[in-house]
Image 1 (cartoon, rainbow, N blue to C red):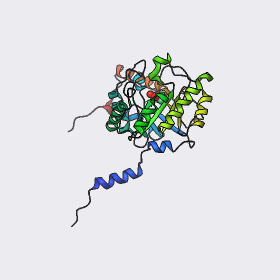
Image 2: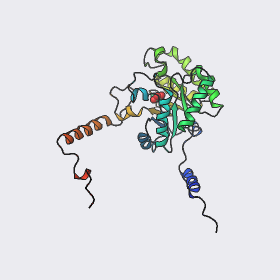
Image 3: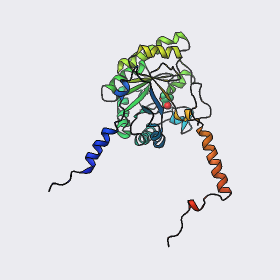
Length: 284
Ligand code: KIV
């Protein structure tokens, strides 16, 4: 009698067929179509919740500020991005996961960028990486894209250049700045980026760039005309104390957390927690 074929293989195959993960080319193909929805995520549990509603999740280096209390994104090490990247790919089953390359891990040369980006892809199993910079990063974007690494570009306000900008400053509010930002957008498109984040760019310029390039633009503080939008999850949940103007709080999670912690503290102090429901009896 023939042995029953091993269960694992066939089961996994059918699971793959029903739960196809969004890919970088899928996002690329959404240019001009239904708006692309995305959020940042740094942990498995928020990734699992957001997975049902977003097209891609970004493990942004903003995690340095949001989760670890740094004042800028500059101190974030590659290892931290990999650790959080792993958590998010474990939590999300359908959304494309994009992991940010942190400051100092890719700017030196295309070879340095490839070495570190390949490590991120191998160790996190994410589907793409993001790097900051336009024209100046075009050679690197081309190098990575041609070697199997899908790249999301990021132009406008690029927080890793905060010391050059002199602060988190909106870009393109003066028309004299437009040509340089447009050149950045065209350069990353031509270099092979599958999408480009437009951060804190004056609305008319963001709308113009969206018309100009043939890859999806993902706005954050940019324009409703962009092909998609991204926000930092903690900002839109109402967990961040002082949010920039471009954030809309879609929830009051900070208030809910505080209320729950206060109720817990009161219940412990008044010996109303734990109750019989929360404790174990002895087996007879
Ligand atoms: O690090 C981040 O969260 C980002 C988004 C703001 C686009 O780059």
